[in-house]
Image (cartoon, rainbow, N blue to C red; front, side, top):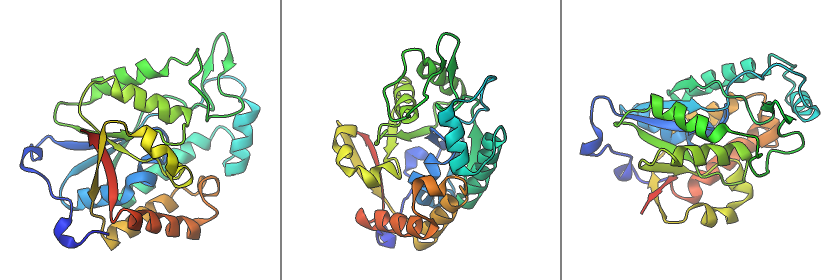
Length: 258
Protein backbone atom coordinates (compact mmCIF):
# COMPACT_ATOMS: atom_id res chain seq x y z
CA UNK A 1 0.00 0.00 0.00
CA UNK A 2 1.28 3.47 -0.81
CA UNK A 3 2.47 5.88 1.89
CA UNK A 4 -0.04 8.40 3.21
CA UNK A 5 1.56 11.20 1.16
CA UNK A 6 0.41 9.52 -2.04
CA UNK A 7 -3.22 9.11 -1.03
CA UNK A 8 -5.92 9.77 -3.60
CA UNK A 9 -6.44 13.54 -3.76
CA UNK A 10 -9.08 15.29 -5.82
CA UNK A 11 -7.66 17.51 -8.50
CA UNK A 12 -8.93 21.06 -8.79
CA UNK A 13 -10.81 20.34 -12.00
CA UNK A 14 -12.71 17.53 -10.24
CA UNK A 15 -14.33 19.62 -7.54
CA UNK A 16 -17.50 20.64 -9.37
CA UNK A 17 -20.51 20.30 -7.06
CA UNK A 18 -22.22 17.83 -9.41
CA UNK A 19 -19.16 15.63 -9.94
CA UNK A 20 -19.66 11.91 -9.31
CA UNK A 21 -17.51 8.84 -9.82
CA UNK A 22 -19.68 6.21 -11.48
CA UNK A 23 -18.46 2.61 -11.32
CA UNK A 24 -20.15 0.50 -13.99
CA UNK A 25 -20.65 -3.04 -12.71
CA UNK A 26 -21.79 -5.78 -15.10
CA UNK A 27 -23.22 -7.83 -12.22
CA UNK A 28 -24.31 -7.47 -8.62
CA UNK A 29 -20.77 -7.74 -7.22
CA UNK A 30 -18.17 -6.73 -9.83
CA UNK A 31 -17.44 -3.13 -8.82
CA UNK A 32 -17.06 -3.94 -5.13
CA UNK A 33 -14.98 -7.03 -5.94
CA UNK A 34 -12.64 -5.03 -8.13
CA UNK A 35 -12.55 -1.56 -6.57
CA UNK A 36 -14.15 -1.67 -3.13
CA UNK A 37 -11.13 -0.27 -1.30
CA UNK A 38 -10.73 2.68 -3.63
CA UNK A 39 -14.47 3.38 -3.53
CA UNK A 40 -14.31 3.53 0.27
CA UNK A 41 -11.32 5.89 0.16
CA UNK A 42 -13.02 8.19 -2.34
CA UNK A 43 -16.22 8.46 -0.35
CA UNK A 44 -14.20 8.95 2.85
CA UNK A 45 -12.43 11.90 1.17
CA UNK A 46 -15.74 13.52 0.19
CA UNK A 47 -16.27 12.21 -3.35
CA UNK A 48 -19.77 11.14 -4.40
CA UNK A 49 -19.50 7.55 -5.63
CA UNK A 50 -22.25 5.48 -7.22
CA UNK A 51 -22.20 1.87 -8.39
CA UNK A 52 -24.42 1.22 -11.40
CA UNK A 53 -25.12 -2.46 -11.97
CA UNK A 54 -26.17 -3.32 -15.50
CA UNK A 55 -27.44 -6.91 -15.20
CA UNK A 56 -29.63 -6.52 -12.12
CA UNK A 57 -33.05 -7.24 -13.61
CA UNK A 58 -35.39 -10.13 -12.91
CA UNK A 59 -35.44 -13.07 -15.34
CA UNK A 60 -37.99 -12.68 -18.14
CA UNK A 61 -41.02 -15.00 -18.24
CA UNK A 62 -40.33 -18.52 -19.36
CA UNK A 63 -38.60 -21.66 -18.17
CA UNK A 64 -35.06 -21.14 -16.93
CA UNK A 65 -32.32 -23.03 -18.72
CA UNK A 66 -30.71 -25.99 -16.99
CA UNK A 67 -27.54 -23.89 -16.82
CA UNK A 68 -29.30 -21.16 -14.83
CA UNK A 69 -30.93 -23.74 -12.57
CA UNK A 70 -27.55 -25.34 -11.93
CA UNK A 71 -26.09 -21.99 -10.88
CA UNK A 72 -29.04 -21.31 -8.57
CA UNK A 73 -28.41 -24.67 -6.94
CA UNK A 74 -24.71 -23.89 -6.55
CA UNK A 75 -25.52 -20.51 -5.00
CA UNK A 76 -28.21 -22.08 -2.78
CA UNK A 77 -30.53 -19.19 -3.59
CA UNK A 78 -33.69 -21.03 -4.56
CA UNK A 79 -35.47 -20.01 -7.76
CA UNK A 80 -37.29 -16.81 -8.66
CA UNK A 81 -36.04 -15.01 -5.54
CA UNK A 82 -32.37 -15.34 -6.60
CA UNK A 83 -32.03 -11.91 -8.21
CA UNK A 84 -33.89 -10.16 -5.38
CA UNK A 85 -31.50 -11.81 -2.93
CA UNK A 86 -28.50 -10.71 -4.96
CA UNK A 87 -29.78 -7.13 -5.13
CA UNK A 88 -30.10 -7.16 -1.34
CA UNK A 89 -26.52 -8.45 -1.03
CA UNK A 90 -25.34 -5.68 -3.33
CA UNK A 91 -27.05 -2.98 -1.28
CA UNK A 92 -25.36 -4.32 1.83
CA UNK A 93 -21.97 -4.44 0.08
CA UNK A 94 -22.40 -0.88 -1.22
CA UNK A 95 -23.21 0.26 2.31
CA UNK A 96 -19.99 -1.27 3.58
CA UNK A 97 -17.90 0.69 1.06
CA UNK A 98 -20.21 3.72 1.48
CA UNK A 99 -21.28 3.96 -2.16
CA UNK A 100 -24.77 4.54 -3.54
CA UNK A 101 -26.06 1.60 -5.62
CA UNK A 102 -28.29 1.84 -8.68
CA UNK A 103 -29.71 -1.24 -10.38
CA UNK A 104 -30.64 -1.32 -14.07
CA UNK A 105 -33.30 -3.75 -15.23
CA UNK A 106 -31.37 -5.85 -17.77
CA UNK A 107 -31.26 -9.58 -16.93
CA UNK A 108 -28.01 -11.44 -16.44
CA UNK A 109 -26.72 -13.40 -19.45
CA UNK A 110 -27.87 -16.66 -17.87
CA UNK A 111 -31.47 -15.38 -18.07
CA UNK A 112 -31.53 -13.43 -21.36
CA UNK A 113 -33.81 -14.78 -24.06
CA UNK A 114 -34.72 -14.18 -27.69
CA UNK A 115 -38.06 -14.95 -29.30
CA UNK A 116 -36.30 -16.83 -32.04
CA UNK A 117 -33.67 -18.57 -29.92
CA UNK A 118 -35.05 -18.99 -26.41
CA UNK A 119 -32.34 -18.71 -23.71
CA UNK A 120 -29.20 -17.30 -25.32
CA UNK A 121 -26.46 -18.62 -23.03
CA UNK A 122 -27.31 -22.17 -22.02
CA UNK A 123 -23.90 -23.76 -21.42
CA UNK A 124 -21.30 -21.10 -20.67
CA UNK A 125 -20.91 -17.35 -20.16
CA UNK A 126 -17.24 -17.13 -21.22
CA UNK A 127 -18.25 -17.05 -24.87
CA UNK A 128 -18.63 -14.49 -27.69
CA UNK A 129 -21.72 -12.28 -27.73
CA UNK A 130 -24.67 -14.20 -29.18
CA UNK A 131 -25.86 -12.86 -32.54
CA UNK A 132 -29.36 -12.40 -31.11
CA UNK A 133 -28.16 -10.51 -28.02
CA UNK A 134 -28.89 -6.81 -28.63
CA UNK A 135 -27.80 -5.66 -25.17
CA UNK A 136 -24.87 -3.44 -26.19
CA UNK A 137 -26.86 -0.65 -27.82
CA UNK A 138 -29.54 -0.78 -25.13
CA UNK A 139 -26.95 -0.36 -22.37
CA UNK A 140 -25.33 2.54 -24.20
CA UNK A 141 -28.71 4.23 -24.50
CA UNK A 142 -29.53 3.75 -20.82
CA UNK A 143 -26.17 5.08 -19.68
CA UNK A 144 -26.25 8.08 -22.01
CA UNK A 145 -29.64 9.05 -20.61
CA UNK A 146 -28.50 8.86 -16.98
CA UNK A 147 -24.93 10.21 -17.11
CA UNK A 148 -24.01 13.91 -16.95
CA UNK A 149 -21.02 15.79 -18.32
CA UNK A 150 -19.53 16.00 -14.83
CA UNK A 151 -19.44 12.25 -14.19
CA UNK A 152 -16.22 10.28 -14.13
CA UNK A 153 -16.97 6.82 -15.50
CA UNK A 154 -15.08 3.64 -14.52
CA UNK A 155 -15.78 0.43 -16.42
CA UNK A 156 -14.39 -3.13 -16.50
CA UNK A 157 -11.52 -4.13 -18.74
CA UNK A 158 -13.35 -7.43 -19.33
CA UNK A 159 -10.35 -9.52 -18.30
CA UNK A 160 -11.52 -13.12 -18.27
CA UNK A 161 -13.91 -12.71 -21.19
CA UNK A 162 -17.24 -13.04 -19.37
CA UNK A 163 -19.79 -12.13 -22.02
CA UNK A 164 -21.54 -9.58 -19.78
CA UNK A 165 -18.24 -7.88 -19.03
CA UNK A 166 -17.39 -7.70 -22.73
CA UNK A 167 -20.86 -6.33 -23.49
CA UNK A 168 -20.56 -3.75 -20.72
CA UNK A 169 -17.15 -2.50 -21.83
CA UNK A 170 -18.28 -2.30 -25.45
CA UNK A 171 -21.42 -0.39 -24.48
CA UNK A 172 -19.55 2.08 -22.26
CA UNK A 173 -16.94 2.73 -24.94
CA UNK A 174 -19.72 3.59 -27.40
CA UNK A 175 -20.43 6.63 -25.21
CA UNK A 176 -17.23 8.15 -26.68
CA UNK A 177 -16.23 9.93 -23.46
CA UNK A 178 -13.11 9.79 -21.25
CA UNK A 179 -13.01 6.60 -19.20
CA UNK A 180 -11.17 4.87 -16.42
CA UNK A 181 -10.95 1.07 -16.37
CA UNK A 182 -10.60 -1.50 -13.61
CA UNK A 183 -9.20 -5.03 -13.69
CA UNK A 184 -11.98 -7.58 -13.18
CA UNK A 185 -11.62 -9.49 -9.91
CA UNK A 186 -11.44 -12.46 -9.50
CA UNK A 187 -10.78 -13.11 -13.20
CA UNK A 188 -7.59 -11.04 -13.25
CA UNK A 189 -6.22 -13.08 -10.34
CA UNK A 190 -6.44 -16.29 -12.38
CA UNK A 191 -5.67 -14.76 -15.80
CA UNK A 192 -3.09 -11.98 -15.23
CA UNK A 193 -1.61 -12.70 -18.64
CA UNK A 194 -4.74 -11.21 -20.24
CA UNK A 195 -4.09 -7.75 -18.83
CA UNK A 196 -1.74 -6.69 -21.64
CA UNK A 197 -4.29 -7.45 -24.37
CA UNK A 198 -7.03 -5.68 -22.38
CA UNK A 199 -5.10 -2.41 -21.94
CA UNK A 200 -3.91 -1.25 -25.39
CA UNK A 201 -3.13 2.47 -25.36
CA UNK A 202 -4.08 2.63 -21.68
CA UNK A 203 -1.83 3.82 -18.85
CA UNK A 204 -2.11 2.62 -15.24
CA UNK A 205 -2.39 4.89 -12.23
CA UNK A 206 -2.09 3.57 -8.70
CA UNK A 207 -4.45 4.82 -6.00
CA UNK A 208 -3.83 4.59 -2.28
CA UNK A 209 -5.94 2.27 -0.17
CA UNK A 210 -5.53 2.37 3.61
CA UNK A 211 -5.85 -0.54 6.01
CA UNK A 212 -9.37 0.70 6.84
CA UNK A 213 -10.18 0.82 3.14
CA UNK A 214 -8.88 -2.72 2.70
CA UNK A 215 -11.05 -3.96 5.56
CA UNK A 216 -14.13 -2.22 4.13
CA UNK A 217 -13.34 -3.76 0.74
CA UNK A 218 -13.04 -7.26 2.18
CA UNK A 219 -16.20 -6.82 4.24
CA UNK A 220 -18.02 -5.56 1.17
CA UNK A 221 -17.08 -8.67 -0.81
CA UNK A 222 -18.06 -10.88 2.12
CA UNK A 223 -21.57 -9.41 1.82
CA UNK A 224 -22.06 -11.41 -1.40
CA UNK A 225 -22.82 -14.56 0.56
CA UNK A 226 -24.37 -16.40 -2.38
CA UNK A 227 -21.38 -15.78 -4.63
CA UNK A 228 -18.34 -16.48 -2.44
CA UNK A 229 -18.22 -20.19 -3.26
CA UNK A 230 -18.16 -19.40 -6.99
CA UNK A 231 -15.41 -16.80 -6.66
CA UNK A 232 -13.08 -18.06 -3.93
CA UNK A 233 -12.53 -21.18 -1.85
CA UNK A 234 -14.00 -19.39 1.15
CA UNK A 235 -14.07 -15.99 2.86
CA UNK A 236 -10.62 -16.52 4.40
CA UNK A 237 -9.06 -17.09 0.97
CA UNK A 238 -10.93 -14.05 -0.38
CA UNK A 239 -9.49 -11.80 2.31
CA UNK A 240 -5.97 -13.05 1.66
CA UNK A 241 -6.23 -12.71 -2.13
CA UNK A 242 -7.58 -9.16 -1.93
CA UNK A 243 -4.77 -8.23 0.49
CA UNK A 244 -2.18 -9.78 -1.84
CA UNK A 245 -3.68 -8.02 -4.88
CA UNK A 246 -3.40 -4.67 -3.13
CA UNK A 247 0.19 -5.33 -2.12
CA UNK A 248 1.12 -6.47 -5.63
CA UNK A 249 0.64 -2.95 -7.00
CA UNK A 250 1.26 -0.99 -3.76
CA UNK A 251 -2.32 0.24 -4.11
CA UNK A 252 -5.24 -0.25 -6.47
CA UNK A 253 -4.69 0.34 -10.16
CA UNK A 254 -7.02 1.94 -12.65
CA UNK A 255 -6.21 2.52 -16.31
CA UNK A 256 -6.94 5.54 -18.51
CA UNK A 257 -6.34 6.44 -22.15
CA UNK A 258 -2.87 7.71 -22.92
